[in-house]
Image (tube, rainbow, N blue to C red; front, side):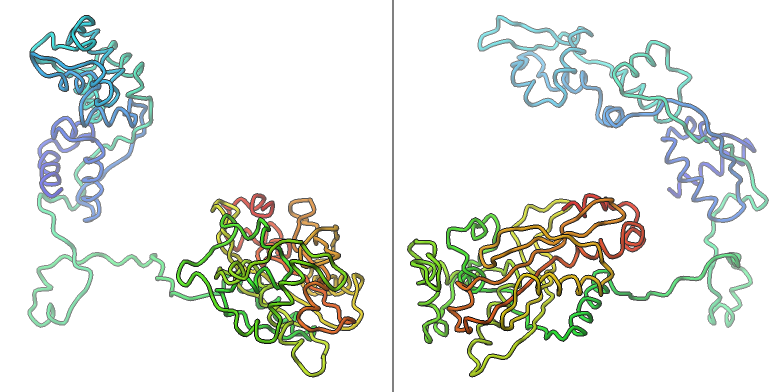
Amino acid sequence: MEDLRSNILAYIHKHETCSSTELCKEMNVEHQKIVGALNSILAFGEIISAQPEVTSRLELTDEGRQVADHGSHEAVLFASVPAGDGAPQSELMKSVPNAKIGFSKALANRWIRLDKSAPGGPRVYRQVESVSDRIRHCLQMVAALSLDSLTAEERAELKKRKLVQEGRVTVYRVAKGPAFTLTLAKEETELTAEMLATGVWQTLTFKAYNFKALGQQPDCGHLHPLLKVRAEFRQIFLEMGFQEMPTNRYVESSFWNFDALFQPQQHPARDAHDTFFLTEPAACRLDAEQADGYLARVKAVHSNGGYGSIGYNYDWKESEAQKNILRTHTTAVSARMLYQLAQQPQFQPTKYFSIDRVFRNESLDATHLAEFHQIEGLVADYNLNLCHLMGIIREFFHKLGIRRLRFKPAYNPYTEPSMEIFSYHEGLGKWVEIGNSGVFRPEMLLPMGLPESVSVIAWGLSLERPTMIKYGINNIRDLIGPKVDLKMICDS
């Protein structure tokens, strides 16, 4: 770069004025490198002036740049054919890039010949000793903007092969500046105590102050939009009298994640395609659950039924329940808390909530991740029913500012009845699913030891979905940027 800048200054000193294309021809350098050198000289001050002029010129395509660097396809194929013995056509077609085009052009140029009757199949031989790669030379002239020596036929051929295309090129008219010099000295940006003490500052050139330059913005942190909404959810739960459940157990046993929730061991959600299974340790012991007979009661209700249920009628295996997984929902935490509630000497009505990460073995794409945040709330009390569930859900979302709600019947292994929750999204102009809910089944609650008259209503939702509903399209776009496909996110 330094030599190129010196040569440019010497040329300008001799000719007073010139264009960047003239410099390309004189230096035999690509135009982009000349422009880079000119910009570098301009950074030193008013040594030169450069006025841009936009013109229509030929420019290289991606394939054209490759040919300009490595040679035309026909020249590359010719070089791959050994002199004398030649090479099998099939081998050339496999080993040489763009062999089909290269073979056709080299054959048309009479650079090679094809012997179809050769032993072992068609064989390619050189027909000349050496070749001149005119295509590459023409492309190099295009790169240097030396287009005067290109004939009309050559231009047409390059366009036909899509090695060049019409483009707009900025050419600079360069002249001497008020502070023109043949030597470039770096301007000092700081006056030091040493410069003042030695007096060397008098011989140095200092860079002028730019009083219009903006100051550097100080670094500052802020909460992520999801953290803001999470704090709002938590406050709403606390205002409604809920207690937060401990959610620091990311690794969970299949027993608490599935079996305790009356989810059969053959359920598709327990497949490796949907759940992350641990390899070390792959299993855990269920001694505490076995000590008071809870494990046996869960096995019995799965295998043979009970509490008014016929169960699933299969051979329940403890080895499946012992498998360690990354929890797929925070309902595993709810199950543990309900079990602890059942162990109290006297039942006390309780309201619990949790907000934390869960993990699903999803194929990652624009709308799915391997983890997301789940919000869950539950109420355990006497004689609760579906009306109580719908009422508390409406109150919960009203506090969040979401008022247009709908409920749709659904199926969950551990709740009956079950409902999906929908909210109308003003930005999208349609109803969007934001959660699931239901009344926990007796097959789940009674083996824990809860009284028969106690019902548990619960609902769960992803933290990300109601965030989109609450803020709407315009506000959330301001938070996460204009290039995000919000419709695709909400549809997911």
